[in-house]
Image (tube, rainbow, N blue to C red; front, side):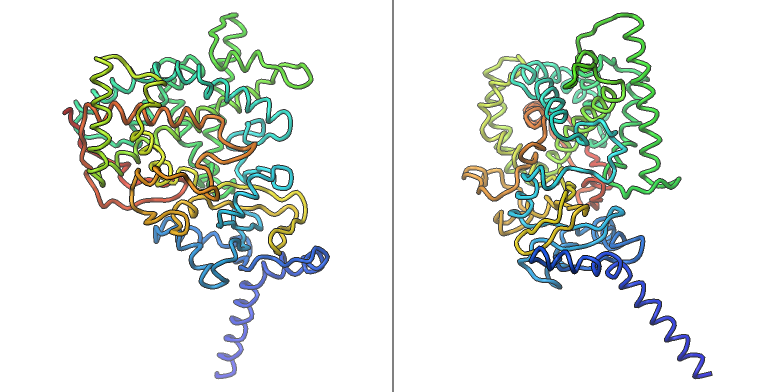
Length: 478
């Protein structure tokens, strides 16, 4: 009997040891020679379990404990505080997690050594500007930047969105209670649908909004095409979005009706060989523009309400500045030039961008074995740039969890990572997102007040940070 128990214990121990070290033996041991040749070593860390990697630990810290920074803090305590990067296995790939500002910035700016390659690239499509490289990427990005981010585009959009925002706030006040994360997405979809593809408010746009929401949940999900998973559902939503846009493209060609919107401009765009973009290229970039713009606008607007409610002194200073501007405008809508004069409002925008964690992490892929500070990043391995950790690191910001717009009175240290990325992969709509939030803050601070219904609601951090209740508020006119 004792012998049987000992044998069973030995078998369990061997299985446990094998499971714990399998990924290390599979991924790490074969790299010893390449490390020696490069004069470097792999970053410290652990590759996790077979097939799963550290997926369970990642979700444990982000969505169960709801303390995402502890995922890296645990590694810092175990492997060293000043390493700045750790090896792991996430998103179905061996991966290096970069968490120091210097390493993240160097990787992000080295577009040839580290190419942008999301594990979930199928969600937005292979022709999305986020998936392209080289000259074609530059051409598409330049188009998007001109369409959404140029001074003239910003002037038009600032005036376009304000009637919709004013109408939405009146509706919220009539309802009394709203879940702002979802309501703001509805508002953003109305004017983005109109501006980008001339879609009018109605059932078709409502369907598109619902499908883009389903698609968005798969952008940072683990890429397993198994029915019932978030990623599988996102791909099904994408198929239906493609059908909607394809039908619109065919209708425009059939009717010969030029609406001179962004969809039309993409249809008339040519690539580097002088050929018109394919339907797939047009659709992938329409999806990308609507998804990122609507998501960013809604996410930031909702979080701004959260922070301003939690910090009433900040709200009062914001209100004072915008009431003064409103009196000067005498009922007219504010302009791009007016927004530049709202100094405190723009500091609130910066602090909301920092605190909201909208850009939690990005991905890059190493194109060769690369020596980075004595550590080897193996060719083909992904690099997860954990940007949110920079924004909450006390080394970069004093009292980082305190919402303090006045911290932006001093020049931002050069080592901090920009909110919208840097280099060739910076966001082509960064000014649009900033201007939209400033417009939102102007109108809501001048005319309305709100109260969180669940001020201590938990926060889910994946795919992006969001209160569990969708930030439900009671909303009234001043």
